[in-house]
Amino acid sequence: GEDVEQSLFLSVREGDSSVINCTYTDSSSTYLYWYKQEPGAGLQLLTYIFSNMDMKQDQRLTVLLNKKDKHLSLRIADTQTGDSAIYFCAEKGGSGGYQKVTFGTGTKLQVIP
Amino acid sequence: DVKVTQSSRYLVKRTGEKVFLECVQDMDHENMFWYRQDPGLGLRLIYFSYDVKMKEKGDIPEGYSVSREKKERFSLILESASTNQTSMYLCASSQTQGLGLRNTEAFFGQGTRLTVV
Image 1: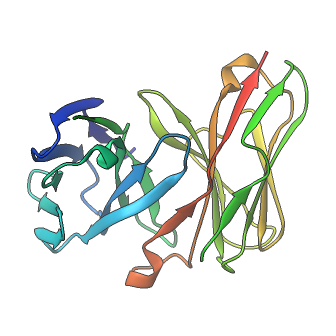
Image 2: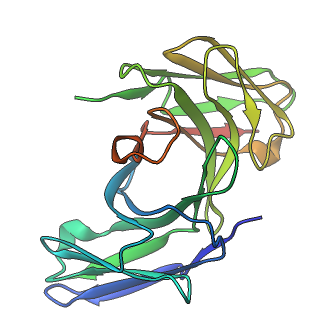
């Protein structure tokens, strides 16, 4: 089946840039997502990119997609302590009537003041 | 403001008990999902439903069942709880499946942390 992989942990200093990486195996992916989960909360959609795009920028967030290598990254500029959370990469793909969303393991971002 | 509400934040149940986890959404979404979240494993799909009374197995349906009698409510049932079902359970809902931009986002509840002792 489809697989989405992320490193489990990332630590950065406040004010630095954070880059969270993700690889996936599904070549039929249509959308790729980044979700954020703050402590004690559910997941919230942070941003997404359509599979025919290679970059999307939204304020401090930059998403890069390398479709050939099936690699997705999320860059957070000027990382703040409020960015500390678990970040999940997810991809939507599959054939047939229902397109399944597969989540990665999540990367826990720790921002050091 | 969109809302997915899970009935309990924390639950402690005994091995062998029948457990009901309830989820309600107020967005008139067709699709509803149940995931479990475990450290190092991410979110794994247990079951989903794309319409009332319709259900489909996800990746790890064993030991679980679901019920969708009304569009806004999706229940996850553990017929006989076991300790390996101790986990965080997340419910989500989304618009009709498809490729349109409006259909891209899933909204999540806050989660139910279930401990089976």
